Image (tube, rainbow, N blue to C red; front, top):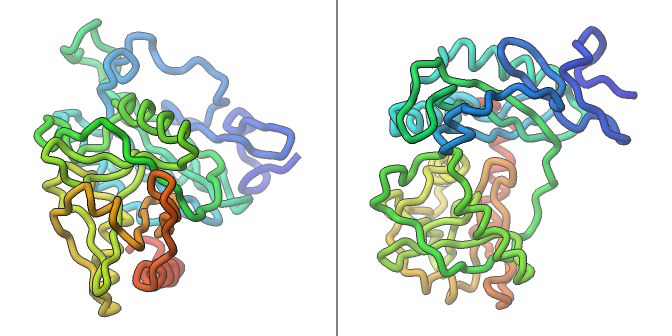
Length: 298
């Protein structure tokens, strides 16, 4: 049996499978066994999806771009009118989970904050927010096949651009995409513009530049997307935001996805139509990997 992070860690914080650590969970000030019953049945995150979250990459026991993820967590919480625990507590819980995870393998770390216990219905109660920090293994990144789903993002929604726990729309879309042999679902918005994936942002490579939908499309302001735009500018690569019709993904010769757990990965098929990795997006992927290795919290 291997212990993540070395000796002296509380056993109740680790859940094991036959290959070693399966998941690590922090709740209410301590590491817990993930099989424990911890969340109240009337927690507003459970009953109505009133919550926000962030997913970060764990590399050798370190969290990548934590400051940016916490900033986006706060923007999402502010958008919901949801109070967050103090940042010191958030960072302390993250550090405890990351240390417990150790350097066994690349993982995902998720920070979830919900509205806490509340009466049934949409109104919030007076309980403090619920905070859960968890880590589990992450699949290695690789080329992606995508399917354009028939449902749209509402760019005028009250939660447009917020990373909330109300993810049923993404669950349905991703399940539909997988029925077509794809790895990711792609959404348009209500104006017929290219928007985003269920867990990713989209890059479309033209003959001269790389384009990504603007935030006005209703897409999430991805941390990796943000870094790609910044680091492309430093490297002198032609990458910019643009309003794109949905047809752009159908007509593209080269395209890619960005996400916190995948970095920059090429799209190799759109609705069964084969694409090849593009030279500009390949360079972006290289630049991102190089700078990510050098800057833990850019």
